[in-house]
Amino acid sequence: MKRLTLALITATTLCGALPASAQFRKPEDAIKYRQAAMTVMGAHMGRLAAMAQGRVPYDAKAAADNASVLATVSRLPFAAFGEGTDKGRTHRAKPEVWTDAPKFKEATDKLFAELGKLEAAGKSGSLDQLKAALGPVGAACKGCHDSFQAD
Image (cartoon, rainbow, N blue to C red):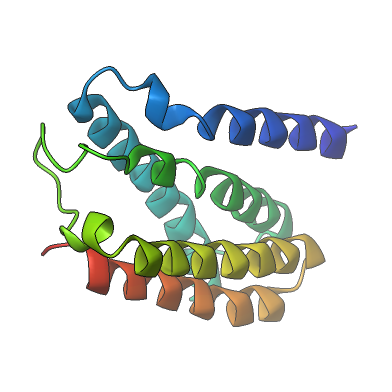
């Protein structure tokens, strides 16, 4: 039952995120939305990293839950990088997000693929699998931030 509920929530969230760029009345709304989603992603990534690094005890259920939330929420911010959302509020997105959209999409697709592997590793209950999957996710995040986020 929990899996069905999670699947329904995930599907609803993703369907709602697809037309999200059309839902923002002002560019600053899109910027706030994507910043908030990135903050949530960072929180869940931090929880997983803490377990993988041994800073907190490994909890298989918490790892699975955090990996699942991270995989779902990761799709949200990218709906808010629409045309015109480079202005209106302070942000750290580089102009390349819009001027090199194919490279940006490639970076996000890589992140989504790695997060799929992380979610599977979280469901496995294995700390070793979690550790192995976490590194490539971190690398995908870093690669995108290096290319598309200003300091």
